[in-house]
Length: 103
Image (cartoon, rainbow, N blue to C red; front, side):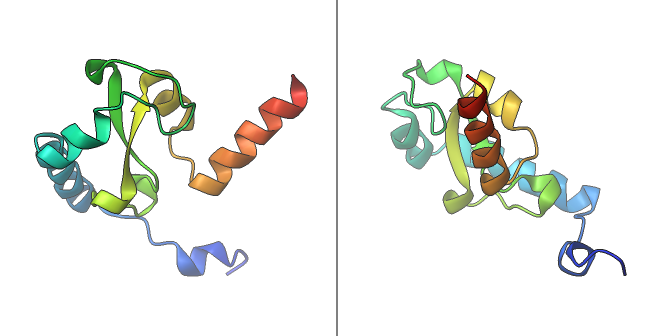
């Protein structure tokens, strides 16, 4: 193995991703999620949005082994969620830092 990350990263199969997406849909219906989005704040940019304009984002994306658990889910505006895509939190922070340096 040339890359050490191959040792530690196991790509999840489609069935497990489907199960995790279903768990996320169920969590969206809970009081916990209502409370999490009540302030209307995007976890990433901190701007205020209506409840309907916030999406559920996995800090560690499902495609990178993340789970649909309360500790891995945050409210995010559509713009931030779209830009983050499949980045891990550290990669996302590096992206934001890069943006700040180029402005």
